[in-house]
View 1 (cartoon, one colour):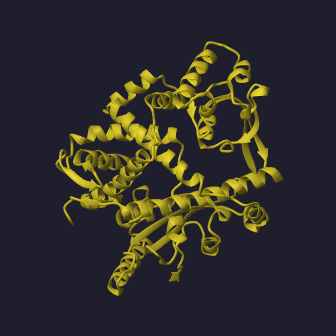
View 2 (tube, helix red, strand yellow; view 1 turned 30 degrees about the vertical axis):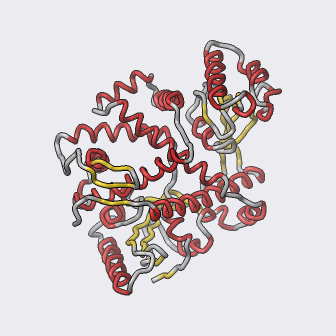
View 3 (cartoon, one colour; view 1 turned 60 degrees about the horizontal axis):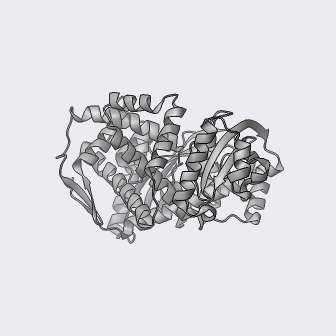
Length: 448
């Protein structure tokens, strides 16, 4: 048994890759729509009752029922992998609690998503799925989902995304020395691994009996997996206490250089399909699986060329003025006006206004996640909706895309992004644990 006494262990291993907002939203709509159809077939609780109190907020049985049916829809062809309903409800409720805490915190600190921003995001999502907004609404209706419910879910997801960006922005810094070390590391050209984990949680200061009980449980779970009686994914769904349990414990693809150094030896010594011995961390015992191994994908990077107009609220007289001006300019571009001329007239001087707003080749997230999420969805020549970014309101037109060999500059940029992503995940997971521990939460589910 490996014993690793590091506060970063659980925080890193429980971190889950953040998928693109558009993909999440589309999958959410389809899954929730199918779940809505399933509601009439199976009711697991009183839909109008309160199932949890979260600070001064509540989670209703109807919300939990929709979320549970969503999970069941995802695993409709693998129902044997799901735990009993009572355990599944408990797992889903914990996820809803954490989501509610994030949304409420975002609102408390002044993060907002306007109706205009929401509509623009829907337009982008519909466009990426080759639909008009009207067709997208019809698709939601066919799947049994109210458009208003979809908008509420999308707004909450945007709030959580912006809370994360706001929280980590001032806390994550990457030094040139860290970049130098990573670029020079032999692991930089090593393979990538798809990781998953199972957590058997323990209290912060567990008693000897609690430690022994957790150890017996994790040993039992590992034995089920090693005997082939249960897949790792099924065991994670049924037994894990981690936030990613309902995702089958999947953490995502990681290069060895993106794993905290103290864990690389453990991971590097495992082959595809291997499951570790129980590893004890500050929050409990874990099993770690290397699900797949592949050659590193970082020899080639995608770069984009674009044209942008930035309306800075601090220059034009406030947020609402900036938003309205950006919307007006967007409309003028849609009618055929020259974007370069508009950029020279209206765009912030900090964003190449003098050159017509042209941004020469850059990697996806070089100008921030908001730009990165949009640029990958656009085709060459397409113009984004108005984007509410940290710097102001942006309009982006994609001019081109190319794949480049990872030369010295690109390797340093990739290294900086890798380190930044790892630190961001660690910081935000730490924040979520603190947010959950400080909240008043009362579950009214029947104890099983």
